[in-house]
Length: 227
Length: 317
Image (cartoon, rainbow over all chains, first blue to last red; front, top):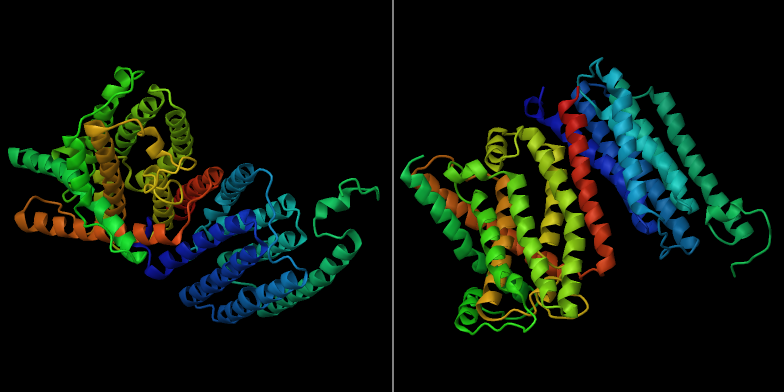
């Protein structure tokens, strides 16, 4: 079956899912924190749109609620909180330079291929509406994890964590038509609480090591030979 | 193939050469208007070429035959590459060589001689320009080839005419791979034709120029040929983007109405693309040379994502 035989709704959904994967790459590579938060907000927005399309295409009406929840929480509330945090921490103009951008990008591409290979047996079971989006959502999860590994900035690592959550949400929506509403509400609340806790942690980390560069935490001695 | 289709193919090849300065003039005019200048008329590039052809051509003492031959090789191979790209009709005898890899090869030949000519005289600027040109093109070429392979995988052929025909058949296909490949191709086209975020075609500023540095030693008809080849290359990339991604309107059979309609639509599409280029050049600033790898890395990433989304979303399952 080739794409031109699919209904328009489904083509649009595939398009949005591919764009969501692209925002994952943008998050991974973006040096400016403010721009990275914008990319994260766009990813949340795309997740909400995909959920609406799945809801419209599969008659899982409860998905409309989770779409609204995602839109409000991940596209608006959490990015707004992050922006506020970044302003208060004075990181508006902070730039974090990745050490080997090309290597990191190629690792992420390899992760996409790996996740495709991983879901091949699942795909044979035939998801009618969402097709291969499971592979993309797994890739979003893995890229979020890669982001937590390669980034040194604590705020960027939190962005990676949040985008992992986005990937899991996309997997749930595309593979099983969403989680039960109770679970979804619970997860959304958890993410919100995590966000608030992270905010507290940022200030704690900054107070104790005077920076949000997490690499400094792996040094044991108190001697400050850099300054 | 009858004689009339060969006639049309010849007409198309001549049109590439004839229209190319007009496109450049149009981009310059649009850019001038956007910057609140009156700007030169759209035929100014023709006047410049005419002036250069009338002038005497001077050679440096150290120039070898490579320097003398290069303008002709560059012009002819760029022209040959251009005449293979369908402009207003697909059903032409040149379709047989309209393979994207052939076109990339011909353009690489032109670039090779351009770089040789830059180094031949032995001035510092020429060598610097050549090394920068090779630096940019070595990074741009993989991105371009991956984008092309993405298209070729959908159409099951690397022939441009098949790609165009496939795109025309495929009516409501909203393909993520095409969107990514288009974005990658646009970035590559900007880098390859030396437009603003990568190279500034309007200045002779020593520290930033790439293309201008290589042709600094040329004068007279040689310079005219080099400039003209650059114009043809811009038109080639414009026609490639317009016809591969929005082929609607191109003449698929040889009839008077179809050909006329194809001609009007391609002129319209090129005018739009030229306008978009002028807006882009006005909005963006030129990048530092060492930011260019990041730019072309993005192009490669977009093309790779195009290919991956083709494999994952469009073929699999």
